[in-house]
Length: 134
Image 1 (tube, rainbow, N blue to C red):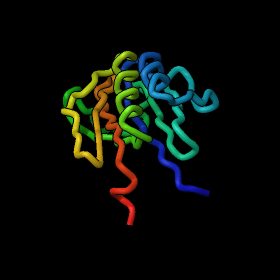
Image 2 (image 1 turned 120 degrees about the vertical axis):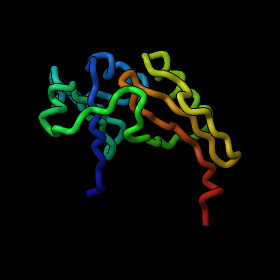
Image 3 (image 1 turned 180 degrees about the horizontal axis):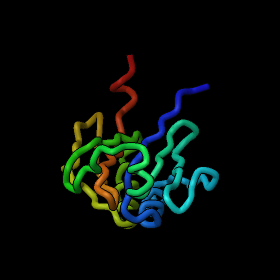
Image 4 (image 1 turned 30 degrees about the horizontal axis):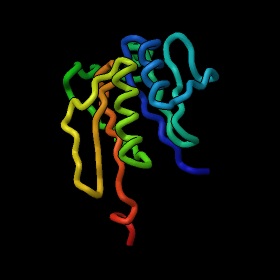
């Protein structure tokens, strides 16, 4: 069985967060979702659990980072520059903020950022497969 990753994120407004992640291409798994959290599925191995603050606090007493702080940056591979741009644009249209960090274009790699409505940073990127071959 392949190793899976479950990213858990605290959110203020569950419906708004679900709309944002749906716009990025995630689907909601209703089997593991309720009015306090949702399991958003990106692939067979990548899941994002968005949890309202009350539910989040059931798992940790540590404080939720304030907006504007950096807890983690989540890089998400894309098949090309166009897909990077499309994800950022879709996220911005769904309540996110595009390019909170400047886009980076290194020729062989292109990256932009999208901040979700709760301040979590996603970094869609494309890397030329020839640059990593060998």
